[in-house]
Image: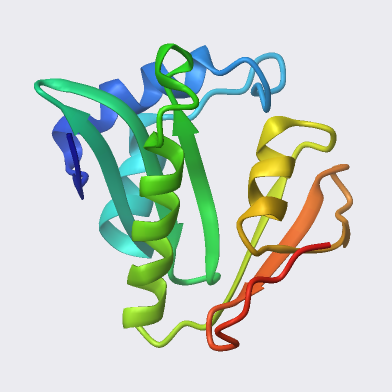
Length: 147
């Protein structure tokens, strides 16, 4: 089991996992296209997958253009097994290696994702116009930051 850089061949697995999540579901009629993922992992940022044997158990995508987390999702059958934490920590290390120290993200309120980010040093900064909770983390501070 390991985290590796995602490539175009991983896109179908990423789309499958994104469609299976129980919380933070896409709004009715919305999809994440292969072209959209391809743009984020090849142009705007980078993506990673957590792989066990030949199975993709989760993925994360960083947007280096906006200094944000664009995606972090785990197959529901593999939740609470350290997959999300491994992807999260790897992604933040990559932001830091690129000297991007302030990172932001948004997630649905009252979800496990919201609790996950708060427990992993992210600071709530309010709500956005889509009703998502906004978080930021200062990777330069060297301190855990909670709410």
